[in-house]
Length: 598
Image 1 (tube, helix red, strand yellow):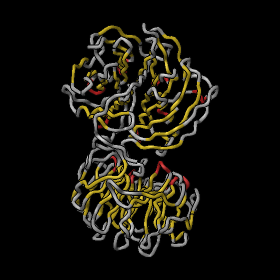
Image 2 (image 1 turned 180 degrees about the horizontal axis):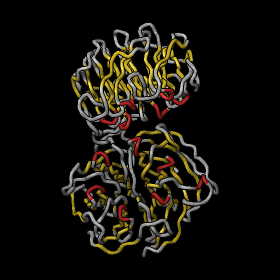
Image 3 (image 1 turned 90 degrees about the horizontal axis):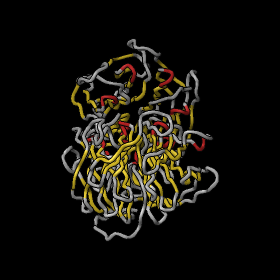
Image 4 (image 1 turned 45 degrees about the vertical axis):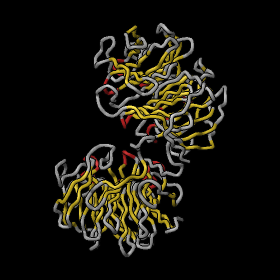
């Protein structure tokens, strides 16, 4: 359900004492148990700043197109295969074939049947065009017809299947009914050797092209396994590769390579001449973060699995960016790796970290304002993380990569800034967390300096606490901060895997999370919040969950695990609370905010 509506609203009367963190998305209802830790059920999803049916991908890998123009994707970390009707806004998707075990490639034959390299199951699965399973071949072994983590698959016009048997460093040729016909290759770097081959494609002439990934080259074989040619070597120049993961061929014989660690696509003529290079590292249109799959449709459109950006990108035949499905967004109301969230009254402020801006919304998810852009001038940001709102709705931002704090008024207008890179009082190294106490003082997690600094409302230095270390009261990358009504505060001590609570003078009161039973231990806590009802919520980023504690640190429940659906998170980095019984989670790698009733 889309509920985007950019309007200014009057603010209600909710008060929260909250923290630091990231993303915009799902409303879930749940109930927590007390006295012992348990996973908490969640239901009733509502999507904020997103479409309810918009596909959400997690490290997609190989892909192919069918005769109806649909895109079939190995959605690897979601353990599924997705079939998309198109790329861009308004598209729809369906999961086909049930659950897989980290599938890394797919191929579609002339009749629309789908072949899946079910990588961690060491199997090949065939799906009929309707999506139902019709055959499964292989298991983990070195014998013909068996596989070890196959990472690539292709099918020719006669429905002969070619599999990159990655762990066995060979190519296997499989008949339409799963019979092993031939295999070739051995581990090494010789002319006919292979080293962790992945992507594979069949040319119009029936030749087999293989992304020989760890040898940084493309190998071309005839259908019997005889080497015909080799393209490329390790490097970053045109015609060179760095761990290429995928290769495809269009109907004219033109070759396209996903040059994975060079974060680009390369195009070659059938005879191996370099024709074009597209892309560089990044998150914008036309940029890539580890492309691992590539396909071309009958019209010459190119589809790329932009793995690190969790999206499928479409390029036109000339390599121009055309659109995407999945991943982060750049439009107002969309997010790119949010790392901070604050709630006060009816106002929600989100650090849209990858887009270098702050997005302001009401608690129903309606966008109110967007503050800032990439840069180092007043009102500009470089990967901002922590955000806080004071009693008069001034907004304070930990401008992390600019090593400073910025203050804005309730209209989003720049007021002042303080801080420069350094270790002296009033200087910062990568500040991540920020919170406001009852007197309007500003506490900052000076993360890279492993200390907390306290400032007056206008940035005047007051005091500091903390030293690097693992002993009680010290820090190892302090990330988020949360204030209590009595002036004490909580710190998410990230690499020490714990929460520490200090009084208003910086004296340690208690700590928890780094000891006890395994189900009560924290794993890289990045965000922390004290709700108006006196419960401490922790964004436990390494475990992809939210933990609930009493103010004394007694575990009372947890919910969430890795994934993209309701009740699942990918690296949550912030949490905040309102006075109506909701918490807000920055679900960073899902690029959303999840609103949850407790």
